Length: 428
Image 1 (tube, helix red, strand yellow):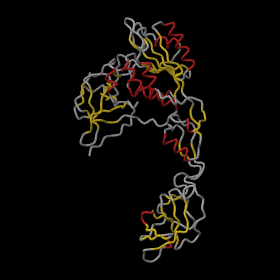
Image 2 (spheres, helix red, strand yellow; image 1 turned 60 degrees about the vertical axis):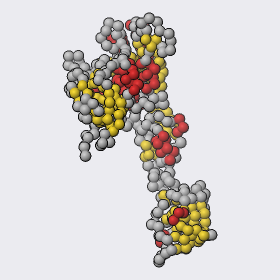
Image 3 (tube, one colour; image 1 turned 180 degrees about the horizontal axis):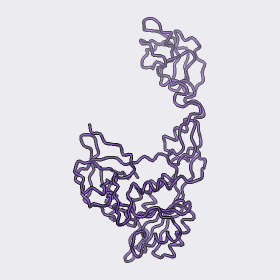
Image 4 (cartoon, rainbow, N blue to C red; image 1 turned 180 degrees about the vertical axis):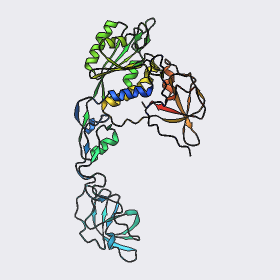
């Protein structure tokens, strides 16, 4: 049996730094986001029907015992097991019939020699301590015959065995999916208190960008990052308040970004954060007073990714190349949204996988290479296949991939059959 250690660290297992370019590690970037960001202020109360995908702001407690009364776990007959003395078989007279939702006084304190027919969910009659399923008896007229004595409590759901009165069913920070909403309903809560929706503004930059579907002018390309990041943001808990584009005009960009920072909880930009003469986003953000918390991560692709804040608004600057933008969003953007929304369950999605071939790369930065699931080995471990390199502008590699494998910056090769960390995209 092979033991694989749990991935407790949220990073890639690689603490590589590029000292000459002042790049920080993935671990350090994630830790910076975690320490800087907390849940936005503001709570609203919603009916359960409107709460899917939201983040719980206050605990959910049970309004009553669940189930509220002892009831039958299946169709059968309620009996007093202590009255079945001597050697069987035993013949019992059926003295009543109770269906789910029916309040009945059938039976009394002494069911000796008697039984009450029950259906699943029906309340237990007085004097009964067990249910014999209908397949285990032979019925003739108003009598049943059974050949074995049921154990006390057999096929009985006891009052409060699921939830006690006042018990905390869900804690604050819980993401409300179908299972959590079911628990709220079972607790008798028809509405819940949730964190307000996060206001997110998206801005793609570059004179070369045109809206997808439009006719391209000379030297233009269609904007990929805007629709891509918008589609990656969960709509239930987050509100995209602005989705716009900007050219390479520093003054116009300053005016546009100033307005977005004032109206949003998070501004996400793509492009304009590298060191070229036409990369204006970072200097404009600095001029507007945005505090830079990190700028540049030892990662491939996505090295220029940047993070900062201005008062209560945060800024995430993604690279302009689409694959770089997507990978850095999956790694840092999702992490940021979890903290802003107040979600408490932040366990890493990453896991170990087996490489189906040798992975080679250049030493320096941790590489996140698109990869596809390619079956399982004899131990049930996932096997991944992947290309020989990562290209920051080839979207076909992302569209076909299930996620990315991490090749640490200090490892030139990982042999075929070796283990690597894998981050699934998880957006389907």
